[in-house]
Image 1: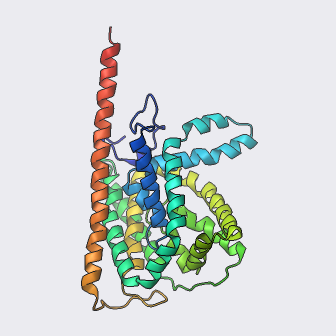
Image 2: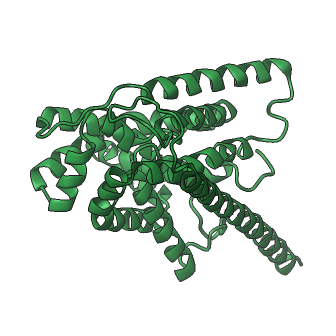
Image 3: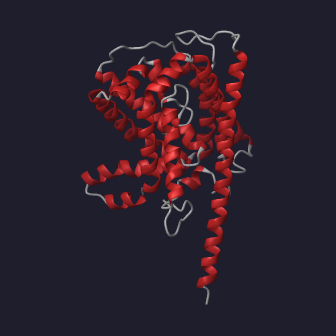
Length: 338
């Protein structure tokens, strides 16, 4: 395991507790921080081209969040098969999961209408801001790679290949022409939700942008804004099926092929920048730089600075937490010595 305290492997360790007190989970400050992280993820999930998984990765909770979601999804299966569902319940990091979900839900319901208006009415400004955020986020997965993981030539070749494939796939997806449905059928709503929800657990993939591509972005935000229960129930069911199908495979990938997973995440982030070029036609075609480029450049810089500051603060807090835990463990050994 890496000595870097912010690596995903570290985050996939057991939930904080008496023997693993890294996050001091019950402290009000930690709970408030997780609510804010959830709120930021909620904002990201309403923005085409911005991934909630990216925000989770930048804010340092990605691995723990994936592990907790997996254990939650294991509980219904274990209840049906008469397995040890209590063990899965104990492995869930509830002090992380519940505040994050609360922050996400409140934010999505409060800003759905606002974000729809901002993205629709201010396309150049919104895309420039979000492009800066994603561009800076490309470096985050590389910081999560273990020291020495890419020292051999075969490892570097594999990493370059995976990066290129992921970036090309994201670029191709974001180059698809876009349209908007007025009243999408419920079966399409179910299927779209099952795919779009993967953005919650996969950095670089924007669920909102996928909804935009298939013409369901505006209808979905409108359903949230107007509390269309039927639409939201079908969407939630599709999202649950998508999570149950995808999250276990992703956790396996993080645990067994962590380096390549992080390289792929960086590639997806890089390729998704195509979706956020500020000057585009209504169907997603690229245009030349407009006269409002100074404003776009400023917003790009602001977005990049926001992500950079968040990543720097998170990294320093993680290092400080790891140091505090080492001190506690050392003191505990000394106090228990004869």
